[in-house]
Every structure is written in C-alpha cells, then in structure tokens.
Image (cartoon, rainbow, N blue to C red; front, side, top):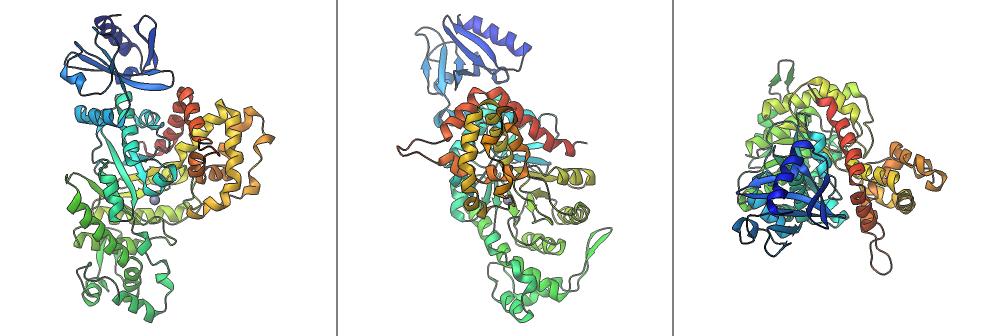
Length: 516
Ligand code: ZN
C-alpha cells in the first residue's frame, strides 16, 4: 500500500471505530492500530500501532526528509516511501511532549479530580476511558516516592507511560501529574526533572500524634521549642491571634478555640507547617516554571485531623504564603488499603462537611481523599453532600484489577503470584494501613480456574496482594531474571483488551457516586 492509500484507510477506520483493529501497511506487514491515536499534521499522519506485544509510534510522511518526522528517532520501512517506525523510547516521549502539547501534564486547578496511579505503566489508557463522561479532571501520572522505590521505576518512566497513553487514546482534555508524598527537597528535585506539575508535600514525620495526651507542662514546653524562625512568629503572638477569638467559617459553623485546644493543635501540627514552608521555599526557588500546584497531606498519621486543627493549619499556611490547591486531612475512621471504609459514615459526613467549609473559607482549595481505592461508601457520602470540590487518589486498585486479569486469563501465573505473596504479607504490611489476616486467605490450589477471580473480591486476599506488589514486581531468581515482572507485563499486554475492560469498569464504579 502506498502512503496515500494508508492515509485514506486511516480516515475510514477513524470514522468507523475506536477499537484496536488491523491495518495493512504493505504486503506482509500489518499492525494493530489504535484509531483514537490518529493525528494529522502538516501532511503527516501519526498513530500508535502494535506489532505483536510491542507498540510503536508510526509516521506516514510526505517524504523521508521531512523535518517533522525527523523530530522522532526510528527507521523508515521503505527506501522511497514515507513510513517511519519509532519505538516508545524516552527520547521519543520527549519529542512527543515537545510537539504535541496535549501529551504534557498541566495543573488541574480547583476542578474536582481523580488521581489514578499506574504501578505497572499499562493501565493509563483504561483510566482515560473510565474518566470519559465523568465530569472529573484526571491526574494520570500519580507517583509517590515510596512506590517508585518499591516498583524500581523512574519518574521518567511514569511520565512517559502517561504521555504515550494520552496519545494512544487521543485524550485532549488535559491531565495532571502528581508527585505524591514528597518528604524532602531531594524528593522534589527528583520529580521536577521529570516534568511533574503537582507536588504533594508530606510533612507527617513532623506531626506529633500524642499532642492531645501530653501533660500540660510538656505541651507548653514543646510549643516553645517549635521552629519559630521558619514560622516567622512567636508563641505569644500566635496564641493571641487564635485563643478565644471567634472565626466565622460558615453560617452554621463558628470556631472559638480555647487556649488549651490552640496549644495542643499547635504542638501537633506546628512542626509540619514549618516543614511545608521549607518544602515550598525549595520548590519556589528551584522550579523554573511557576505553573504548578501544591497539595499538603497529613493523611498518613495516626490520629484524625479535627476541624479546628485543619483550620489552624490552613490559616497558618495562608499567613506564610503557602498556596495550596488541595489538602488531605487524616479523616476520621479507617481508610485501609484496597477495601471499603471502616467507621461511622454519619460521623464521617459531619466532619467532612466541616472540613469542606474550612476549605471554602480559607482557600478555596480541594479536599483530598487518599487511600481512595475502593472507598465506595465514602464516595456516596461525599457525592451526596455536594459541597466544595474534591480530589481522590487511588493506585493499588488498578494493580488489583491487573491481577484480576491474570486470574481470568492465566490462572497458573496468578496462583504463583499468590503463593509467593502469602509468606511476605507479615513483613510487607508494616508500612501500610491494613488488617487482613493470612489465615482467612484460602490457598490458591483449593480454587478451580473459574473461581480464581474470587480472591479479588475478598478483603483479606486483596490486602495481601495489595501490599506485596513491590516484592512481586522486583523479585529475581538465582540467575537475576525477574520472577514475575516480565510474565505479568507480558500477560497484560497479550490480554490488553480484557485488562483495559477490567480496569475501566472498576474505576467507573469509583467515579459514579460523584456524578451530578
Ligand atoms: Zn496518602
């Protein structure tokens, strides 16, 4: 087929379907085309097409010396023709982002949004399909430092996977990139270099969870010892600003903190506020483009953030010039990994409303719900309140849907992974909020192939699989080959349609309760 015929064929396919379908490029060479990726520019056609389990960017160019095609590294298929095959390398991802603005992340702003982490780098296209029609904005490259280490991926790999996915799906609505749970200036630097546009500060190491129970003298002494230079304040003036002063947050909500409440809230979060100021100063000084957004998260701490504490944090951040797009309190109740909310939903709703009122009064900024995987009860509660805008973060749930795909398509691989994961659970659970008991997880050999997916519907098995992802993805055998990583990625690539369908369907369930 010559170039002109291919261009015509692309047009016909684009009008007919969004589903992956075969495209003949010349006799003996056919690729699996992703129709939404077809893009016309200056007489060229760009599209994503797979050969076997490998995807490429293809360029149909008017001539082999066109400058536009020269921006991408690859090989020409015919000496005289104009078909170029470009691997999905980091270099070509950079070229893609330079040339096509919609493949670059942008700040999302105050619009309600969903963060969908992709530990394997294969789920993003399904995330894009799920978000369509939800009314939500999307944070696609959402990556915490902890998870980067556990998956042994680089920030560039995460960003490139998002850009290629956006191009493949022809998604033009704009997506965010969240450098999640940053604890040090070095964490910030690492993620800036990869082009992230949202920075989530996690000063939880400075949160004093026991503040409410300290003897009064010790609380007072700790308050004195806070880094007042960084806080640009003194204890006396701080207390004078808050103690017994009425703050009208909303029509039905006024805060008038006692001296004791103010002091203990200060002891609990004062160091965290100072650390957020330091991180913000570093970001301001080192980020070349002021077009980014900041979230503050204290969700990974032991004690819930009360509305009064939230108020003090937000009020102080504002005084110190730290502008935030979202704040993640530690909400009341249990947000365990990979399963639904545990706690009194009426209490949650009441507190959430107060938090949202504070966010509206002192921002506005979004309330951010972390560990958002599978918190359907919370979504229904928040959705029904219709107050303020919200950001939700999920990651593990997409990994579990990947495992569901494996259970459905390659049962023996799933059994191997579960067998491997079980004895690791007690060690791996330590850094996660989970409650699964290993003895409640059945043995995989007791289940026939057709019932293996039930493991993904059982809370204990979900958490065992959820927290062991790092070891599953990085364990190697005696000669240095990956035990599971390659098999897992190959399986998902071979069964891409099923994988996308599982992830899309499951993420849609997350989005549904927020619809108008
Ligand atoms: Zn978090």
